[in-house]
Structure formats: C-alpha cells, structure tokens
Amino acid sequence: MTNSTNNIEAVDTIIENSQVTPLLRDEIDQYQVAYEIQKGDIHTTLSLLKNAGWIQLSYLSAIDWPEENKMELIYILFNWEQPVYVQIRSKIDRRKPEVPSIIQIFPGAKYYEREAHEFFGIDFPGNPDFDKQLILENWDDIPPLRKDFDPSSYSKKKFPSRTYPDQFSKKDPDNKTREKQTEREKRANKLRTGGGKR
Amino acid sequence: MKKMKLFLGPQHPGMHGNASVHLYVDGDIIKKSYLLPGMLHRGFEKQMERKLWVNNIALIPRVCVPEPDINEMSFAMAAEKLLELKVPERAHWIRMIMLEFARISAHLMAYGGLGGPTGVYTLMYHAQADRNRILEIFEKISGARVYHQYIVIGGVRKNLPKGIEEDITTLIDDLESRLDEYRDLGIDNASIVKRIKDTIMLPEEVVWDLGVTGIGMRSATNKPYDVRKVTPYARYDQVEFEVPVSDYSDARARLDIKLKEVQQSINIIRQSLKKMPEGPVRVKPGRGQSMRWTVPKGYVYAPVESSRGEFGYYMVSNGGTTPWRVGVRGASYPQGLLGIEKYLPGTRIDDAALWVDTMGVCSPEMDR
Image (cartoon, rainbow over all chains, first blue to last red; front, side, top):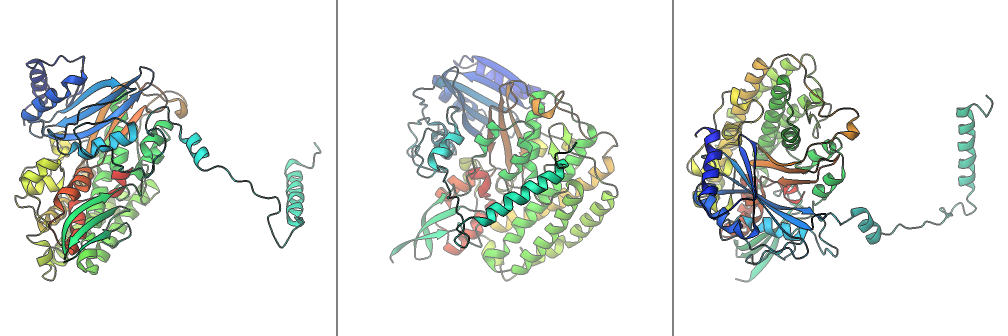
C-alpha cells in the first residue's frame, strides 16, 4: 500500500485524463475525496474507476434537496490496494428523478437501487426489479425519505385517534371511582401546595 | 418430485433477527430463494433527520442489535470529521477497548450460533455465558449492558471506573485460555465437522461480484483487507495486530478466522490498557447548551470495521441542529440480499440456516 496522498492524486489523474469535467472537487481527509459530476457522466466515471481498481461499491443512496428542486445521487467506491473512498455525487431533477442503473458495472447495486427507489422514488431503468417492493409493505404515500413527507401527519391519517366513553367500567356505571379519584387528587394537591394558605 | 415453498424465519432458531428467507425447494435442494426484509424496519434514517445531534446518540445503537458500538463509533467519527474536532488521546484508547470487546461479544454470539443449526447446544451455552461476562464489563464501564450510548461526539461519555483494568485483565486472560476449548467444541468437533467442512463455499469471484467485505472477503481472497489496517481510525495504527486470512473459504475456515480474530482483539485490548494515557476523555462539540449544537455543512462517509465487514455512516449536514441525511451502510447488505438470491440456491435445506449464520447476516442493519 502506497502513501495515501498519492492515492488521492491517482484518483485526480483518472478524472483529469477522461472526458469527464467535475463540477466540484472536495478533499475530505487523507482517505476520502468527493467529486460532483453531471448525470450523464456517472457511467463513464464509475467504469473508469472500477477498471483502475476501485472495485468495491460501498454505498449507493440519495439525498433530497427540495429547495433547489434537486435529488442528489451518491455512489461511494473503495479500492483496497490504494485505500481511498471516492464519493461520486450527481444532482438530478426532482420532479422526474431517473438515472440509468449501474448493475452492469456493479452487480451489488441491485438492492441499493431498489431501496433508493422505495425511499426516494428514483427510477433506475436497466435494473429489472427496481420497482418491486422491498422493505415497506403496501406503501401508499409519497416515498418516505423525501423531505416533504411528514411522518406525524401520515400516522395521524393512517391511525386516527380513538375516543373512549367516559363510562369506562361496567361494574361502576355511575363513575363513582372517577369522582373519588379526582377528590383524592385535589386533596393531595392541596397538601402539596400548602392548602392555599401562604 | 413436487416443488414446494418453505420459509426460513422470521421466527426460527437458525435465523438471526426478524428476516425471512423464502425457499423454493425440489426434494431437499434449494432451487430459488430470496430474503424478505422489512419486518424490523423502524425508519431510523428518517427519525435521525428529525432528532438533534445529541438526541441521535440514544437512537443509533439500535441500528444493529448484536453489535451496537460500531454505530456509535461511526456516527461520532462522521460528526467529528465535519466538526474538525480533535478527540482527547485517552478517549481514543477507551473507544478501542469498547470496540474490541464488542467485536469479541459479536464473534462469540455468531460462533455460538453455530450450535443452533448443528445441534451442539453446549457450544451455544458456553459462548453466551462468556458473552455475559463481557456485558458485565460493559455495565461497569457505561452503566448499560447492550445499548451503551458510551461513545459520543467528542470522546466518550465518562472516564473508566476505578479498578476496571483488573477486571478486564482477568476476563481476557480467562477468555484466551478457553479459546482452544471453543475450537474443540465447535470447528474441530467430529460430530459436526462434516456439516461445516467443504460446504457453504464462498469463491473469490463471488466475493468481488457481491461486494462482500469482512471475514467473507478475507477468507476467500487471502488478503488482509481490514478497515482497521487499510484506513486506520482511532489509534489502530499504534497497536500491533494481525489480520487472519485464508485462501479456501468454507464454513469452517470462516469460523476459524472468527476465533483467530477474538485472539487478536484480546491482544489489542491488552496493548490499549498499557498504552492508554491519563487525561480528559471528552471535549464539547459545540458552545453552550447541547440542544443548540450545530455541525458545519458537508458530506462525509465514516467507515469502521464491524464483525461482519465494512460498516459506515454517510452523513450530510446542512449546518443545522439536526442532520440533513444519515445513510447507513449495513455490513451484511451484499451477502444478505443479493447473496441469498444468487448464491444460496444449490445448497440443501438444512444448510440454509448455517449459510446465513456463517456469512454474517444481521437483519436489523438491512432494515434500519
């Protein structure tokens, strides 16, 4: 294993020698570098890096940016011989998010793409099963990891709050116990606050 | 013979956690299979976006139930990278002790899990009893047995209690002396050796195809690919340890590597106790009240080596009081989902539970 700064330079050289023009480069630490690229360059960049030794797809997911009206795809690749994690990011349109699948390059991406489809609603043409349900069963709302999905209003809609009758016991239809209880609470409260005398 | 559909799990002695494997069988050979996750989905990634940085510490250990400390470490590392925070020296060493104990306890649980599908229950009881002693150490250090919430952003929650070094030394000496016994009870036990030797193979090309990491990769490729060695975090670059490998990956080889890794973890703990300096164990990540702590903008990926392979958190901060997005890379994602679909067919029904056990599949981290 060579020096880690040389490894990041190796990634830079690969990107520079290709037709890909990165929109942004960010060196996070000695083992990690990030590139933001155009949507059309994803396939070229990933296959170039894979041929150069970045053979492991560590992570694939998405990030929602509703203010910019964008979705951001994120691919993390790793090379065990030249240890650098490479983040490849790309922003796509949020209204109709669609990215060609990368399962021809990384077969392991199959389930990551299914998950990204389920949680963000991104389509991956080329992946035969991308729209099959995986984790969420019978989901009937917008994809849940989008920022405009509100879990609390969803659960209120899905599980409306019930109202219980005041009369909660058959043995005690006049609700005597309840009265006794309120009285006891009142007395206790009085004792706690010093009986109103100060 | 008529084709049948069988279910392994979600409630099955050979299945870890609540995931179900659907098996289509012809005779007793599996023809087609897939995993049905989702029974343990708790929406962690969404919940983390809604909770403050400090509140998340209570949530993250729940992502992986048998080995919670890696979550704390990965979350803390990611936030520290964004904050450019310098963690006190002593905290690094305490973190390593915790992580290595967590590794031993996860390995013991997985190795004891061999007892379920093969019927050697003695092994399981011994492993669980020893794991319990590790949990007692955890309880003394952090106050909790399973979910410690001990590794926090900026260090560890509190210093080690007085006299814990002696307890740790006694425990690791004892564990080390019992490793041969574990070997005899498990992988060298004549009554089960036929079940684990030359079965449940993991060839090298399958490893690269799936993207398996951890013990699976090291046992098949004969290369010491370990996140602790390749991209060292904490103070793993200052301790001496070996990464056990093999070039023939059957179930026995993988279990053998697990036992060897327990030995290496014991060595690391011993060195950490010696090298650990005195001093503070925590720095505050922000000014003022913890509810108002913010983390600067940025994208970061923080990998750690879990007992099943590379485990990491992908974290995006918007500069706010909550994370903008936290993604969890579960170590068992490749072998658990794609592996079961592509490579479990061809084995026999009774080996399916063993397949899942020795490949290291943890369903909570796939569901989240």
